[in-house]
Amino acid sequence: MNDRPQMLGFALILLVVSCKGSSQAANTDGGDAQAASVAAADDHARAGFRLWDGDGDGGAKDQPGAQKLFTDACAQGSQLGCTGLALTYLDGVGGTGKDYKKAVSLLQPACDAKIPRACSALGNVYADGEGVAKDENKAGDLYKIACDGGEPRGCFGLGLLYAQGHGGLPKDEPHALTLMKTACDGGVVEGCYAVAIFFRDGAGSAVAKSPSDAAHYAQLACDGVGGRRSADGCKLLGLFYDDGTGVPKDRKKERELLATSCDLGSASGCAAYGGLMLRDGMAADRKVAAEAFGKACDGNDAQGCYGLATCERQGWGTDRSPMSADDHLKKACDLGSASACREYRR
Image 1 (tube, rainbow, N blue to C red):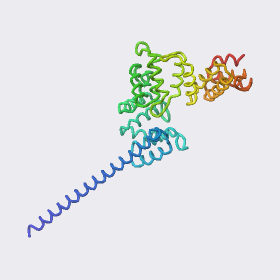
Image 2 (cartoon, rainbow, N blue to C red; image 1 turned 90 degrees about the vertical axis):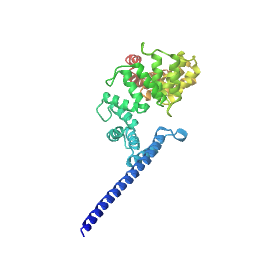
Image 3 (cartoon, one colour; image 1 turned 45 degrees about the vertical axis):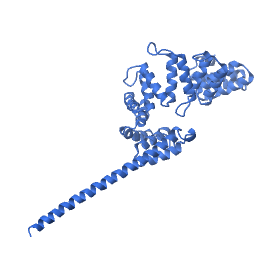
Image 4 (cartoon, rainbow, N blue to C red; image 1 turned 120 degrees about the vertical axis):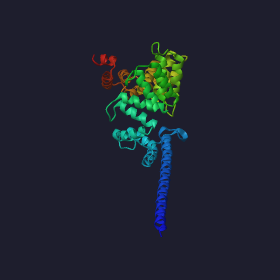
């Protein structure tokens, strides 16, 4: 009889232990399922970035398709997906307009979760003061986290700060150049262009001029890395073929490269192309020159507006129109062309 209460107590202990074990197993199973769900969502986010960056089949970008993948992935708990979704808010994809507040609300937790691209994008927001108070010191910290995490865009941003001595960082051109090279090697086309400028201009005794290296990196920028081409890189390389910087002089290649720069959307490239075609003097070239100057002026390039005004005054490649010429002279003057200001005020 005395053994019965003891037996009941022992049975209760076994029951409690059994329940605890079952609960722990259930929690483990639930945790594994959640981790698997997030991993699958991360895969969807990576697919979204391939569409966003143009790294998929054929290299075509599909921002609406990427946005859908990012939205679904973020909803499933993927911080990588939330990073991509934030980029769509920064770019205003989907017809809703840019929303920096939403972007920051997504980027901060993602950066805290050690997503390098989130830290880099958040660094850009603070560097530009978009939707937040401008804070280059904070931007520098975020860029460093991103760069140390293998994000080349972060290295590019950090390189800009070192090149300028901003963000509480010392001005350090050699280190800036190293960071820009890292960015270029990682597929950031702006990094390749920046390296070309470094080698073209040099930086005193810190960075020696190297015309051949300048031409090499300008070629990389123009040809494109990371699925993107640099219109400014094509213009720079075209000018190198004009003056023989690191390459032999070649008027044909100069013309082709400046035309490419203009086609890729560089207003200053269009202005340079127009100037070259105008110098060549043929009637057909003058028509092309006037069209190129028009594109440049539409892009608010002072030299483009000045060139267009010259064509309109002389009737070169377009109808003679003194009134329109005066309008474009005024615009060129307002954009900072001293020559245009002198002519407009006569």
